Length: 154
Image 1 (cartoon, one colour):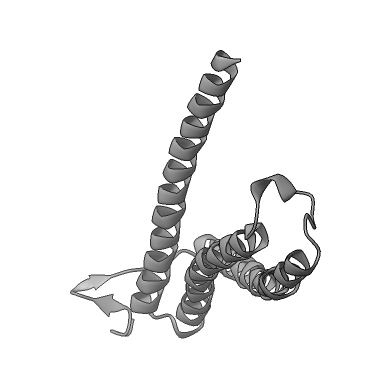
Image 2 (cartoon, rainbow, N blue to C red):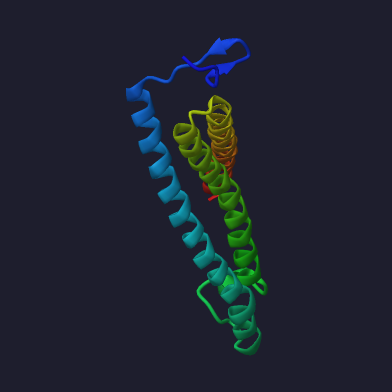
């Protein structure tokens, strides 16, 4: 047995079945991240169209659009919102892509340090998703309370 698998005086052995699961997971993660990057690119084009094109149309044609009640810069706010969403998605997709690359590389080279780094990227991805879920739940509850107070006034 060679000493390349020894890390901090510990020999870490990844069973064959676990290696197979990690390989499949890294392959799927790579495809998901690539498709996500393409989707984010399309969303950036949509946001730029909203920021540039529809804002101009609204200045030329008063009352243009379905949300004319909101007033002036609604397309600008919607475009900026899409760009913020895309920024968050790109950060998450980078984490998934790093997990995929590091895990695939660690399985090919039998390098436990790369596997650890890949799993660390996956952990940080889930921590970030968990924080977004908590923010979403709190925002949803706030929106529900607001809607109930509006309904109670009617």
